[in-house]
Image (cartoon, rainbow, N blue to C red; front, top):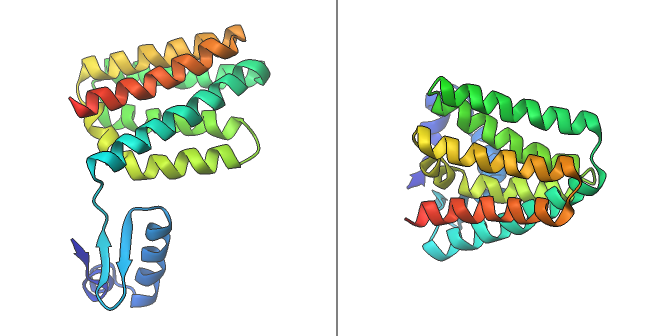
Length: 183
């Protein structure tokens, strides 16, 4: 769908300048595409695009979790454990919106904890492109439970300092998300 600058500006009560700047940021994140003399369009992901994004996220997440298994602090592990507990509470409350938000935060935080910024930038950038796809995968209590059980496996490997298991659990979690989305 084409984004109409004037309509959006009128609706939001702003000039067209902030709309253009927002469109540039969205384009940088891969969410829209700009065509010369035609306008800005919401980007559609092909099946191949989506599969590639899931695969790339799996590799980056595996790297980050392996890194944390080797180097995380007790405080970082407690923080991640608290996030997993919050996701359990969201599941019990059957609050899909809260679970989805917590899930995003959990994965983004793992990437941030690597510490150099590059991992987080790459991981969250890829995540923005697949966010709507991920929402479909996390629908229903059973899907949320399955997802959080995988988070618990990732966390257990990180806590144990088992680099290979942390990497494998993170990659498997992302690949399972891809499989569920494809189904």
